[in-house]
View 1 (cartoon, rainbow, N blue to C red):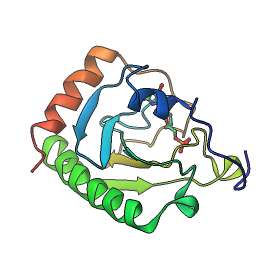
View 2 (view 1 turned 60 degrees about the horizontal axis):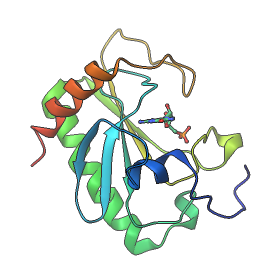
View 3 (view 1 turned 180 degrees about the vertical axis):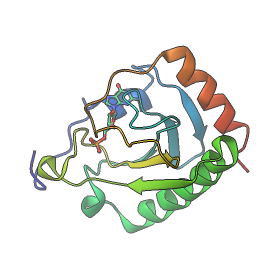
View 4 (view 1 turned 90 degrees about the horizontal axis):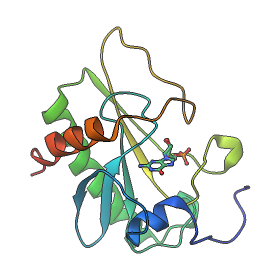
Amino acid sequence: MSLDGTYDDGNIFAKILRGEMPAAKVFEDDHVLAFMDVFPQARGHTLVIPKHSAARNLLDEDPAVLAKLILGVQRVARAVRAALKPDGLVITQFNGAVAGQTVFHLHFHIIPRWDGVALGRHAEGGMADPVELKALAEQIAAKIS
Ligand code: 5GP
């Protein structure tokens, strides 16, 4: 899917928002939802998405929604740091299939990094154990402030 096109509300994140698909939720407020990535590139890989949005990517998004979203990303990233004590954090976001985007509802990735631990490949890792993801989500949620 290119940068141009229309939002498809059958995408997996729209289904998670409607409660049609399960997710290991970390945090939610009126504006954003954060949950664990099921194909994590690292332990604690968390996604943050706008709740009221029909933007496929960052370029499409209403600036007011984007402002709330990035504040949510910072809040969740701080909780990931506090919970998992990584040595660094990758915060990233892809626009268009050619750029690596695979789900076309705007989202940010928060990926903890540890010295000496290689980063998994984007969208190519194995599926995480749901029990482990739930435990990580709870650990991170406990550090939301
Ligand atoms: P993108 O490639 O669009 O930047 O990121 C989409 C992310 O969603 C990928 O990291 C992928 O692992 C993750 N993902 C794909 N399907 C699901 C799903 O059903 N549940 C969750 N929690 N994450 C998913």
